[in-house]
Image (cartoon, rainbow, N blue to C red; front, side, top):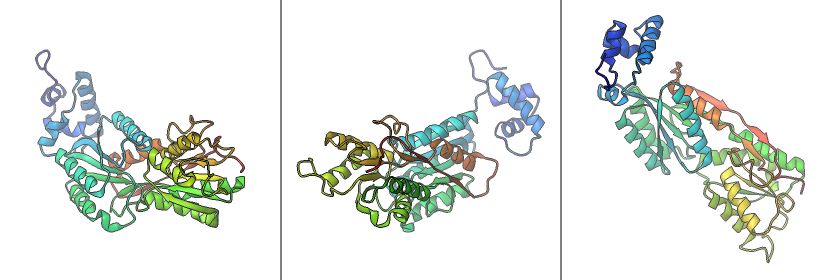
Length: 341
């Protein structure tokens, strides 16, 4: 045993268990070469002694740390924050840590991947929409391929032009469901507040909407996936005031391509004196945590961030190391922001 006040070392666990350092290391990292019964006994002894794995020492020894590097395109967006929270929770249950990085552009993403590689994390996850132009992610793909060859595991969320396991939210189906809901209510003149067109998530959600709405979609504007982007979309649609009325008086519903945009649109509509859903219906996507508290609640398509986080962990830390995809379904959540026109 170490002296009082000193941390428990791997050699202390080995001495107590009567096994080699290599056996303790393999047992604690679930590496092959140790029988399940012995590995369980060693882990039990380590837990009783209060041993905590030194991830930095493991990295310096030449291996990869059992941490996950998570790259988010917008850390301020509740959708991505909730994905991160879900992943952190499930990783903690497996004694793993999650390191989070914020990257907006493809160049930012590439830089963060290189940083995570220098930290020798055990897995790298890109949680953000891929780009419609495959050329945008060529450099990222090469960097991830080199990382994977060194023993790391990778996963992406959403469609990417990357050779990697993927968590695939059903954005197309969610778009169809939102559109069918509005058509069933009787809306025939609908505006869409879209995000950047180069993002796959935007393309998929627009595809689902277009398949159902067709010519009912009479106004489309592109803005940032943010509250301000939603507010800008409303200002574009209505002008700065209602003195002259909306530019399209016949529009009875607005679809924002994210809940964050919908929240911005809601705030701007309220400032203009527009009542939801009496004057106009409003919908979003994602079902972030605040979607059920604005006014009478936001009608939206829920793409479970909890399931996305769990799927990320399964692809990067699960026993099945084969490259594969996990599809995430949606649920249409009908609340008070939509009604008959």
